[in-house]
Image (cartoon, rainbow, N blue to C red; front, side, top):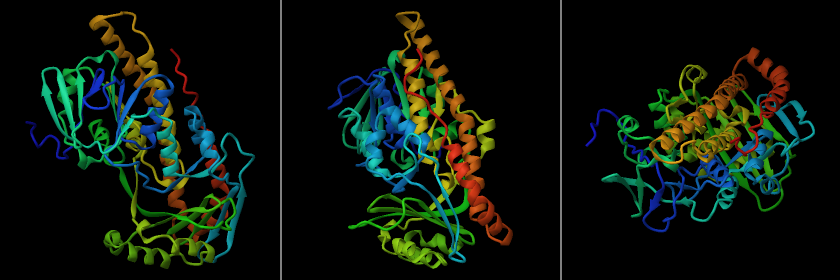
Length: 466
């Protein structure tokens, strides 16, 4: 029995450090156990699959999660998708965007229109999140993802650990670190019970990589604080039409006094939109009332063009769910440890950021490719000692070095994205005459160059250097 004062949140981390055997339909051995079928988790699983390392992905939901509806993918995101081999199928189903149009919600006038340069790699496209996750999932071997896999209990039997899932399945693990790795990617904190991490880290050899979202327990264990609230909220939606829309293949952005909105076409019949604002105390009470929230959003659109207003009006009310915009302080990443021994974080657990650069999804894809490459380098490299405890210790050291290499590649990249997104968001959504002048006359022209500069990052090929 664990003392309840140590971990107030009830989440269990099950550690598997050897071939993992499932008692039902997954009898084959897997090298990597991934918990969470989000962008980062599925990209990591697919990257490992391309390198010949099998994984099992446990997802607590009964289907792929599609919160957010769509996301902007820039050149760096397409390079990551090409690295895992699914870029072309996504390009065929999403329109390439030509530029950005910015319009004032105060006057209704167009303040700037800037074109993207000749496209590189995949160009810039708005990709439906569901389509992206489905493409990642379909590229994985059958049986890789196990849905409705909520952990309900852990039973010890000698050197074995039996992890019981809510559907009756049990995962049997052996404490033998020769060829195993456990990745904790994204898990609902209410869906599992906490196990005593610190004691386990001292007792057996293990690897834990946390990409368990903005409320990451692994990040907390590493010493990171909970992400900070920016004071801003967002509502997002997607409108699927029966006939073609008449929006240009450009990002349409609308800026007002303390509010910002945007509409981006995914294809000829699909429009993604967003709205961000600084909520009042009254708005917080509307979380349980999407009808009132929709009315509030429509009331704050100002002199937005009628065509854009209609898109939001015709969106189903179920889409109107406010999301608090959070970020991790760059100072935390600068002074903190992404890696401690064999424990590391990635995805939103590492770099929660505001959506103002459109780089959250791209960064998750970068993480998946780089993480898969670094893990594969560690697992595929043969130890100098062929058998015994010395070989196991050597491979364990290789895994630690691989995770440190991953951390070195991601730390400053994450700091740059978080900082830039936060500052751009503050400027775009500021109120006052001076802020309006900066936003309309200077920032709108500077922003495209900033977006393109951040999109030049190359996560590299998937092939590890052994």
